[in-house]
Length: 174
Image 1 (cartoon, rainbow, N blue to C red):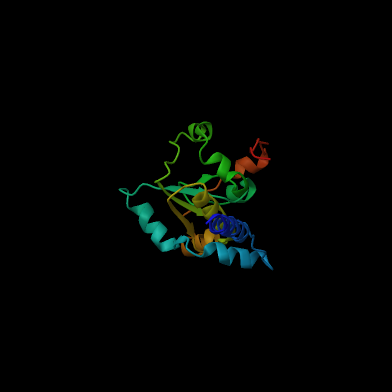
Image 2: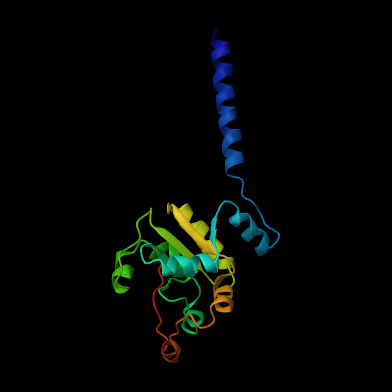
């Protein structure tokens, strides 16, 4: 009887070790594009036309976040978007002070968030990170800023004065 209990315990411990090892295994990618394609799996995507329709429908509330760098953003951005560079998005997204400075409320975990970058790759990473920290309704813009610029060449804002006097900011994190 004791031998049977010892065997059961040993099997449970062995099962736990195997489960731990299999769950902690990391995936190695041969290229950044492979990583992006893997990250896309299961993410919500929105087209520029659907985003435009959403913007035109004033009853819909969502956060539009540009995850490019400031110098990219200043030369052209989608109206109503907030700049949060991808490297700091997981720190800034829940920072009350950041949102107060933007004169906006901080997004709730259930609010809809749409992220975009230049071509759609960095936004995939940002969308995946936002999901991993608990945001429930996150989309990335298919084709990014370039797709928007082609579809709506006259519908954008820019902030060229900001490039003349760059401001060094603490981005948090590392």
